[in-house]
Length: 66
Image (cartoon, rainbow, N blue to C red; front, side, top):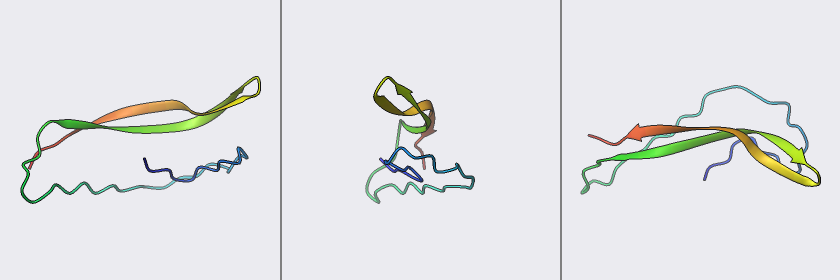
């Protein structure tokens, strides 16, 4: 899991914008096949006394190939 710009004190951080690059490099002796899912979540909410992070999300399928 990679967390970027998350404040666990539950205080608004004011949002932001920008680009994040994740470089996936396969092992030299392995041929990459199949796919993985990259999950991205944002947002928060409160239900009673429970604080919830990641209320909006998307899964992005990444096809693994040479």
